[in-house]
Length: 219
Image (tube, rainbow, N blue to C red; front, side, top):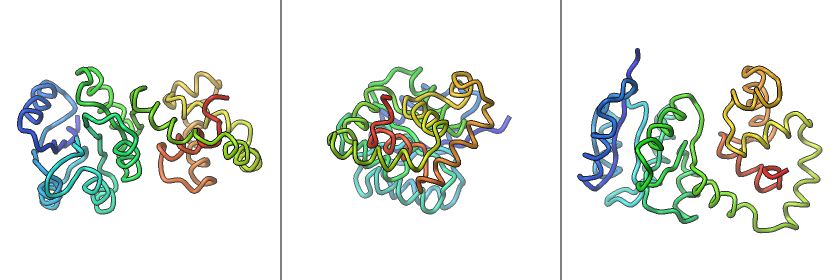
């Protein structure tokens, strides 16, 4: 089995040691290094490939948001899972816009960390409910704007694409969407790809934002 190369990026030594202990018995992950700021992380990655980074946000020298942005520019296949004490809008949206594939709180239980890592390794995104709620709130402020965009939205997507988008925004995985709509996971993949192309978006986080902004998530 191919071991996923993981880099821990956090300026607190105790946090790094705690994450190592939590992942010590993982059969999928190999911790290849640690960094206590973003600049160290980038220097490490210049010398050794990394598949997944656990990324703190508040760090000296180079913070997690800017580090994530540079990682996604230079190493687009590397996944970034944000680990933070912050549950506020600014850092969450900042990490999503920088390209993070997931965002969990440092107070999360061990099983949440493992689930988030597994979801990212499956090519999915992971945002627990308390984080998703912040994202939804940020993109749900103007009802009038939602109504206007909904009219344009209806012209862009087919009814099936709209249904798939709604379920993506509600955090269902591809297999779960396939079960609900009685279609194959491959067909869901096709719809997801078409949605990204039609809406000119880069990733699932963009689809979630779009669905919430256009009042599709709660249809």
